Image 1 (cartoon, rainbow, N blue to C red):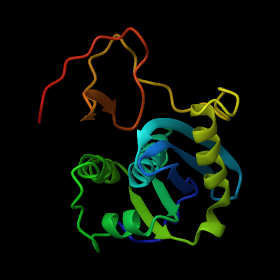
Image 2 (tube, rainbow, N blue to C red):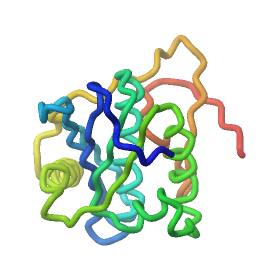
Image 3 (cartoon, one colour):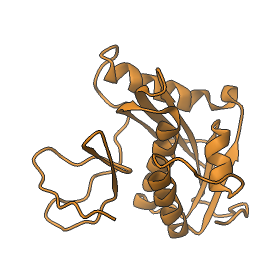
Image 4 (spheres, one colour):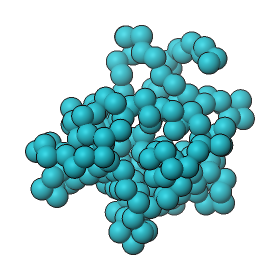
Length: 192
């Protein structure tokens, strides 16, 4: 993981936030992405069902990484108010939670696909756009807001190609990490 400041003109900044009402409870994430000039590239948010706050924070990070990689950006700076996630990604804290371990490992697997990656912790007030998107996702999931996403997420993989995805089983349900599968798709589950 590079801690260098990206000099590339295609460097993007992703403000990430996740939340859970009840912890665990109705959860969602928001990601507010800007280019190096401050122009908004995307506003991503997703309802995650009943999850923990930390699960939602990592889901936001994975969405930011997926966006950067899918859109061909080589440099990504992630800004988050989750001190736990930031310190885990920097190697300052260990990941002891069996719920977070697969999310952390998936994030660590995606980081090398970028030339530059930086993650930093900020206070919640400095992350208000992502916080708004995370709350919007939770509101939508709880039936309190329109169902439309504020901006399109990266396109899912084509169903005609075999694609390896990672997931986590919780409560007998497979949760795909970093995205969603379209309805009606057949999957093959191989335990790790």
